[in-house]
Image (cartoon, one colour):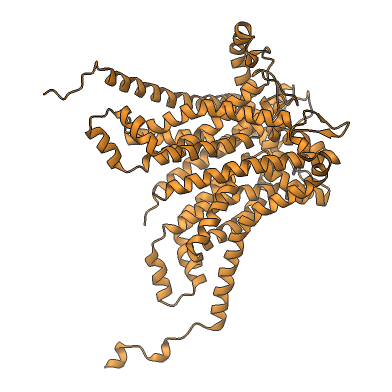
Length: 316
Length: 282
């Protein structure tokens, strides 16, 4: 009975036109949502840029090189904040790169059993999960008192070095930079570790086979091979460091002047925004928007570069 | 011919020394974690009681009180932010994983990663420009919008990953028995990926709950109960920021207690999501 084996032709129907329409509508909804993500980036730039126009017109590019931030005279410049942002990020990277990359190496090689490594990797990642404001609180009550004796020693014995030229008075560049170090460590460790574990095992085998020790293999073979991935990790960390707000605001002292001492209070663009926005009015709001725009562009450039590097690496 | 390397050889010594140094750096990296967690636990636990969860923050110099209004405010704003970001984020991820051309998907994933790197304070500045300036008031809405943008990249990335690991055969089977594309996605693929999606959303919510920078000048803060979405709204994170810098012992204790709640929230969601993601096989 052939009619039972093959279903009759009329049972197979084209999709109804409403069904097809629903499909189209569904796909278009998801498409709009996806393109909205890219749209948000553009929208942020437009909104912030638009509000910054009055300050852009008044101060021009001189805004970046001006030293005073004076709401009374309505005269604004962000040189001290740019210096603070760069300096805290620089110190943080200086400390976090060696610690973070060696941790990544230690946690990607088989120094320890896998189960212990998994736990350690998780713990390092937890560092990134703790809210910034909690680091700030901890910094005020624990870190600042802790590093004061150290700072006093440096000031006493090395005060001719500009970096140690003021006595530690509490909040300052150094505690802020130390907390930023802690906060960017997980970024460097996690992404460098990804880059290292993604390397083909043949590299390691060949090097060990030629008689290299484990660390010769790491330093001369693995690190060069994973170099661009590690650079990507460092760039991402730099982006985070420049935009880090709450912990820095609570620890840096918020003084709008350039002081080369590590123990002197300073300011960053992010903490300037955090401190002044709520009470600002008039041209000050616009100047803050201008500062925000500068921070947005800086982090955007760093991030795009970092993502581009990481994406290229992931192709292998 | 002797091919062995003596343990007194400088190369061996260098090797051992480097291992010790790298191991020490791991320990150094973990010291802050232990220090922060233990301090928050020690200082916060003493105030963790019913009064903390039900009372308003007291004025300076008055003992006792709690952080109930901030808890409610955080719940409202994070809830609103999730209502905005979860549908948009999941839909965007569906497009990336199911319908887009590879080149398009690459660009949108790129944009998502870049958005993830935008400092949270800038999201606050954006919400201020878009909502506080136009409505002339600090509000829970403005805070929620800033938080929702913050949550989007995490939600998109985890949903995208979750959809990608759903086996292709499941889709073919659904389409083969005549399901429409939206039916295949909504009734077959999404249910299969749901545990991972929920994990991602939970992680995003926990992260948003601890964020302060997008809220300080969008939602602001108040000592009282939040009574309208169009007025300044308190939150745990801003409470920690405000109370950390005042010279009153009672307020500082409340800041530690609020920190403990935030840290517990993050800790729990991180551990649970880690356990949930461990068994992501079909």
